[in-house]
Structures are given as structure tokens and as C-alpha cells.
Length: 129
Image (cartoon, rainbow, N blue to C red):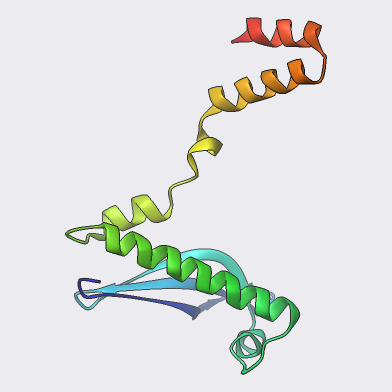
């Protein structure tokens, strides 16, 4: 993986009012560490439960999510030659294509109107394009 390491960590540098800390993806390359949020906040106690020998219920869900995010990061790292943090950030934070394409979403809505037998609304929506 060209000298790049990844791990999911509990970032204890900043504590929120509710006593939780952000869980972040840490990417290290050439002794430089960068942290990327994965939108999960846990207390130290809950973090320990997530990483216990046999996590249960929501703790297991958190662990699976953390593993999924790290695997996603590793796959992106393998694609980038030579590795740069800028290229990694672009790919890691990239939204799925369908969520950014407003035209495609609107066209899908119009197609569903026609399937549902709402032709009069379909005609109005088509003219909006």
C-alpha cells in the first residue's frame, strides 16, 4: 500500500459537551497523520465496549461500520499512485454519483409518475425539464 497506513481511532483531543469524542479515520503517510471524520461520536466507555472481545448489539454495528470505512479507505489508497492526501480526500469524501445528479433524480421521478398512471402530472413534470 505504498507506505500508507489506516486505522479508526477515538480522537480524544476535543471532547463534546455530552462527554463524547469523535471517531475518525487516521491516514498516515511519510510520518504525516491526517484525520477524517466518519460521523460517529462515542464515550470512552462505549469505545471500549465496541472493541471488547465480543461486542453486542449497537457496539457490533459500530465495529462493522468502522471496518467498512477502513476497508473503503484502503481500497482508495490502493488506487492512488503516487499517493497524495489531496487525491485521497477527493475520493474518500466523494458523494455517490446518483446523489449529485439532480437531472437524473428528476428524470427518475418523472418515469415513476408514468408507471403509476399519473400521466397528467408526468406531462407537467416533463415540461419542467
